Length: 126
Image 1 (tube, rainbow, N blue to C red):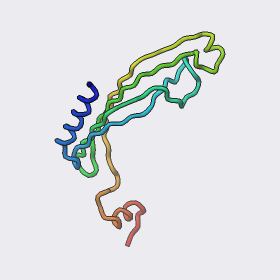
Image 2: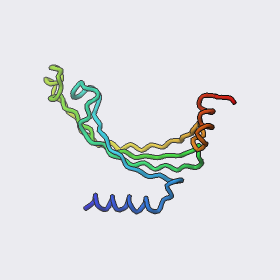
Image 3: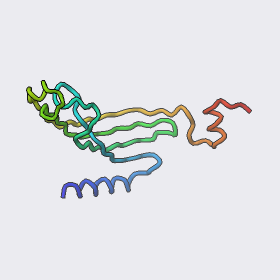
Image 4: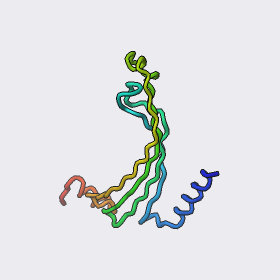
């Protein structure tokens, strides 16, 4: 039931926003712990990471963005291929929430015509 409430809220928020100025989105991916506990595979996501992003396009070249990501991390020495870690048998489990903000600047004028874009990109002079 909570999921339905969140989906409805996101849908209603996206209706009220102007897509050219404000952008809102959701994303998903994977996460894993890299450290002294658990397996030694560094790129092997074993948990789900979900998040949301909001972007305000102040002008064609300037934008502010904010995002929030939530994920659970877990690592168990029992799953390691290292015999010393298996013998130690430690484990960790935690939930992480990351909040970030940033500023984006486009060096190229992406709203110009194709010819103007190529001139800016390759410094073509007539």
